[in-house]
Length: 209
Image 1 (cartoon, rainbow, N blue to C red):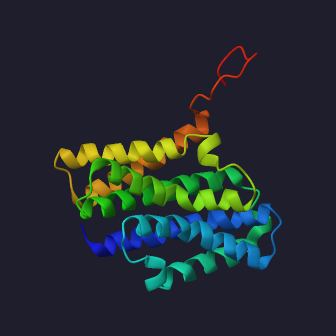
Image 2 (spheres, rainbow, N blue to C red):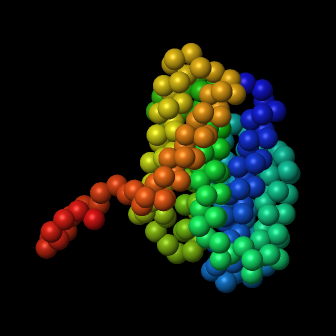
């Protein structure tokens, strides 16, 4: 699999997540610097966590392009906020695309190191949801991946598909694209149809929520 394709996917996913982070910052009435910080945090946070766990050089620290892309996205969202921030549904679709891209990249990086199935899936998930978890913590919210929507579950399923396709002999860009597309579609379907995992039933409740 060409390193150039992985790099472009990584930059693209960073830009997508930076947009969602900046939108979240605007919706929480942060100032200009706060919006930029959110863009960088969400855009780069997951990739940094992934690289640290895989004991790889942190891409954000070796290539300024990641931070530059996040800053550009943050500035654009700040300036265009009256037209963009209200389109939360469209932002969710962008977020789904970022989830798919980062899941695929995380799986590819772990697999290239010869790691086992659990590590491959974990690398995809941590890379995909890490930035969003930081975003929600900064907003003093319970991270969305723990409470709502078909989010981390979509990333896990994408990692499982990656392993299945890899074991079937599918490699290269086809494996990367297939994982990203499947994860993205799974997330979109979960968002559209409000798929959720069951939560524990409390005393007095008559049914699972």
